[in-house]
Image (cartoon, rainbow, N blue to C red; front, side, top):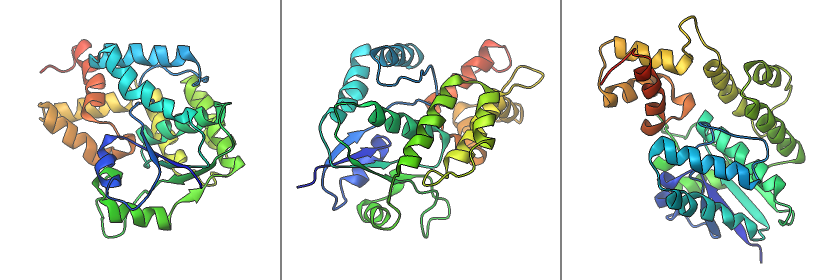
Length: 263
């Protein structure tokens, strides 16, 4: 009997997923690899130690909480599965987490060769303002599983490895070279727009601000000076980044430290 694992892109999707008719085990991916320090060897203890330290310091999370919510959950990958389905979205936050998960799978030497599938919607029928998997119920997730799930090929996994290596450099020139040098995005077409968005935040303007910081400053200067108003205005124009409020706060804190905004 085939043993299947579903890797979900966060807790917001868990309730809806529990209403599906899909069997198998569930791993909830709770990291935010689109922010903070990363290195290419995602399977190393040093990688996760650095991530835990950064998460703890940035979000005031106890180290034990990170171990339980992230490390222990990812430990489920040590079990042998014949099928693994990854559920991620179109934005930069999800696409980088997807790359992390794929590269972790690739580097897990104790895993047999599972068939790896991806469910990654950029839209949903009848939902013109589709925001993500977390807003879908069980039957809607079943529909995606049946209609858009694709099996990833060796090319896809090689592309994911190259994308991850480029992302980990945090160098605009190398990200740009990766984008322009990739002629075929295969089953990972949403990587391209997310990497283009990432490139914009690696570049700084004459004030030393990246794209996200400048966007937030413009919103603040337009008269939206409370955090809820800033979040809403940013999300309305920049959903490609997939930033939650706590991640936006990282950028707002930098603007505060520079004396450009105050709350």
